[in-house]
Length: 331
Image (tube, rainbow, N blue to C red; front, side, top):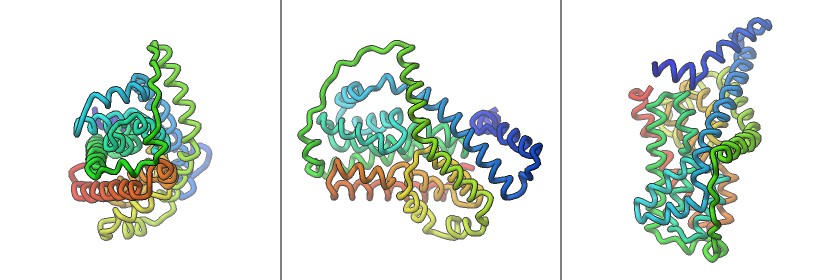
């Protein structure tokens, strides 16, 4: 039953078969490189956009119960490690990329929340949202998805704890430290209001991420059908002990969210890249993308930015090697 759910419902393998039959009827050989690339491109684009729409609708409905002011009040009730755990968990129901998480981070910091708490949120939000759990289940199975999310939360909590212990409050830009977050009254939303909000999030997010999905699927199609398997194995397979580091570094210049990285990860894994290498690449893209680091530089000083990047990079690399070590148990 679970295999059916993973393959036919989450993975939508029926769609891949249908597209293959349709392309064959049109005279395109799907066993060729061109035909295989077209099939991969159409299948992954449609699958990701359908899953994206459903996931954002559900997650945005949940998110409507946690506007910034309510999230701030929730976090304010906790102290110490408990506050950082709650912040990391709240990050799973908030925006889908690091660039959209940074304004919330600024607002929480201006409101006087501890720096460790706000950084636990900032790490968790792009790395382990609920969408990543479902999408990873559709590609890699439930074991990989759950371990990925748990380890992402561990990185978020550990990173926030370390930053708080270092007492780096003076490394936040003064306009944020001296800012005043307005405590606006929150009107109670009715069911249809929440549905309307969720649908607006679907259309808005789909417009933003669709170009990156196309780019990601395009790269995945090239990797899947045109790059020799030996190349991927030699660079990112078990024979290269630095594959995790290479994948993490390669992910940094890119700007995408979980939806854009999934087709690349899927293609790399099918070509022989190790699981930990693939997941490190995904974490690097979603957490440490260059555009988001440029945005974060406006909010924090160089020392704190460097520590944040170092913590995330070390955490991502350790997670990658951990997944490589237990790959045979998970897949």
